[in-house]
Image 1 (cartoon, helix red, strand yellow):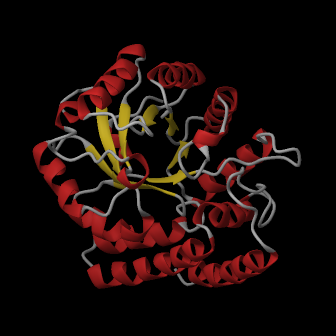
Image 2 (cartoon, rainbow, N blue to C red):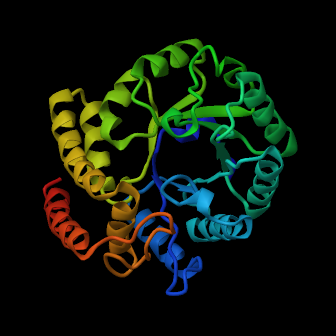
Amino acid sequence: MVTTAADLGVLMAAIATPYDAEGAVDTGLLSTLIGDYVARGVEGIYCCGSSGEGLLLSADERTAVVETAVSAAEGRIPVVAHVGALSTREAIELARRAQQAGASALSMIPPIYYSFGIEAVLDHYRAVLDAVDLPLIVYNIPQFTGTEFTVETAGELLDDDRVIGLKQTAHNMYALERMKTAFPDKAYINGFDEVFVPALAAGARGTIGTTVGLQVELFQAARRLLDVGDLAGAQRVQSRINHVIAELVAIDVFPAAKYLSGRSAGGAGALGDCRRPFRPLSDAARARLDALGVTLDRFLAEV
């Protein structure tokens, strides 16, 4: 299943990577997690991004995650593989492996740590695009990478037919609208769950998010309400989405979201802790998350 821009107006879960008791990637739990997500209405899987601890995994582990996700999805929904890496050489290798594994599309942050100029960043993307035959979603997450994509800096990439979209993990709705206006045939995908409704209003066609798997029913409800012109109703649902997000952020967003995501694969905490240097959740944090799970169940029941 190769993805096009038209396929990206979906609710895509940025999936956590499960570990077993020894800290190895647990592909069985990953398959279970994806099966539950598909059954509940998740419309795409995004592997090895921030939520999946992609930069903390080895190349072999990242490949195993993509292979497992493709197998578990069984062609029902697209599987996007994040292949961002420190070096162009590594990103190319990950991209080739993802293509061989059957990924629907690639996504990639710009190279990080060194202060690369925009021409070096564009060359990095072109090298990966030239190495494979899969479409690419540019991943704009400037607070982590130091590179912000706008209509000026991303224009050359968005003008490339092999680039089918941009994941806007930034609160800059103006920049999103300007890119949408200049390159209307591309898919602009929200990356911050807390601004799902505003991003759709600014021109986003779908979302890729840390909490989509946790509360896909709320995202579905917000989208339905927007589709029928009920902005106030959509805003009320967004407020509930944001209540969950605020609690996760107050604790430690990625470990906290991973803990609750385990509810789809055997119980809260079933996916294991995030890898160091993330700190394990305290008993107090786990108790707070268990209470949040009760609230979340109420929100989902009331959709």
